[in-house]
Image (cartoon, rainbow, N blue to C red; front, side, top):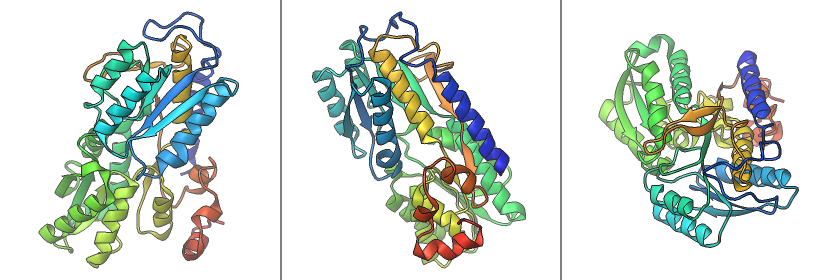
Length: 366
């Protein structure tokens, strides 16, 4: 497990080194899709999709704000808006930021297709757009996220490992993310590439808006349809939904079956400590946020992304988008110390509160 954490560190180092070709060090030539050259006195519009998932307010927003300040000598301003999972509201927020003449936008889209028109409005106004975490459609200038197919593969591989010989004894339930999120389709694709042919999928759902309560209702339906003795594991695309799934499992008297997750949310990590949840996918948000800020500042200042974005990704509407994909790792009770604690995401005290202390002691988390 330590080797997995080292792999993340190595990947993060690679991203960090790539980021050295940042807004301060990129060439002086303006990117053809960027705005006119500016100094450090820039305004960055940041639009995040929702706040039900803990990561956005705890990690993404403060990390991006901090990095923009650092890159601009404390002169850059981040204008923030959260769409609360409402695609129409997010489009209005983009329009407002265009009217207020921000210099660049970082957009994590609620709905990757619905945002396309607003992205075009921004571009028409000379405002470059960085697609953050989700590959928005429309004429975006840059993209940073994680390798989402690999995320799904990582989840699927972990579930098969946890199931062992039980993989042939019963059925699993697959709880995918929202159909409006392109990442969800990639997670699903990666998971199926590992699971298909090795375990029977009894029920599969695309969970509306990623909401835990919708995952809970779906899981209740799956238990009713399949029978509680037939379910041997659950693929959950993220930790929030895993919480809703585990609540349904408990209510039905089902225990000791592996449930996957993603995002390394505090509640998810605590469930991993107790054994209620088998794993999560740890995604180093500081690296992703730093890259997004680097891209945004460079574009606002009219500089090239060549030294930062070594990858190219195609969206349904735009080809060869300059991109940075950040590596991920499977988080289980065996490597909590080497991942989220080592990277400063959480402290032992945050994880091991009262009712979790005995479980933490048992796995050596002190």
